[in-house]
Length: 139
Image (cartoon, rainbow, N blue to C red; front, side, top):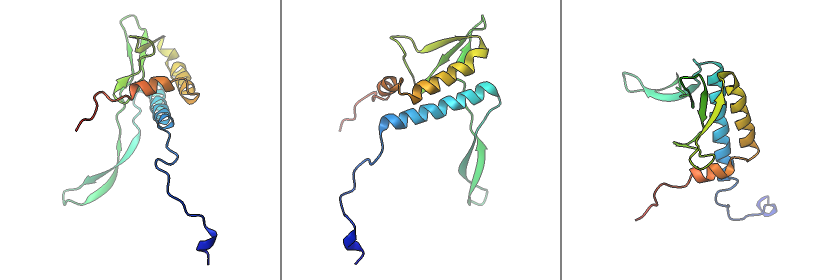
């Protein structure tokens, strides 16, 4: 009997899923998208979507996904970068949600340093705060 050699147990819930690691990975992917957008303003990654044609048949098509820049340039030419997790901007210090980059030539290096900081776990507390629910579910 082959089954007698196996060890049976109850399956763990949420096996191997750490919410902090998931948030880190999502932020890293979004920051890398911002780096690509800083290098090429026309950058639009391709995503696959199911769409219906005229006859109602579903087809898998590849479309361009629009990415909005997380930075703005003021009248003096200084660049300010905000980092978003979900729909919220990360608040680095009390009331401070932007990073003053300075010249636009420094933008890619600042974004790259944010990727490294995310990989090392320096933004974990900010990601945890930004993910707290706005209102509690009652019912």
